[in-house]
Length: 111
Image (cartoon, rainbow, N blue to C red; front, top):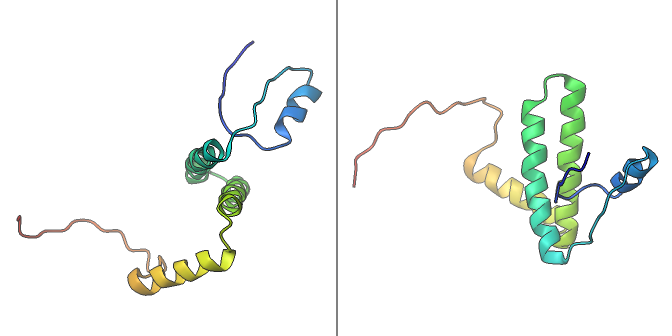
């Protein structure tokens, strides 16, 4: 059965497909395509993490999210420390998530 994907996959996936006796075709993306594909993959993996039921499944999906984040950092040559510093700045400015707050509503003047 033929099925089209047109999405970023891990480097070992084509070999895994072939070892199963199936055929596939891959193309190497240019930098701009790769960066966009990583952003799309981040959304895909984040959705899978959000839907994970079992703890091991959550661990696996979070590892996939981290893999995509690492690849994004690498393609933009962003030092890990730069992201940690921005995380700390935003935490100081807006807080973290430790208090488990759910915003229920707001009200204000229109205008």
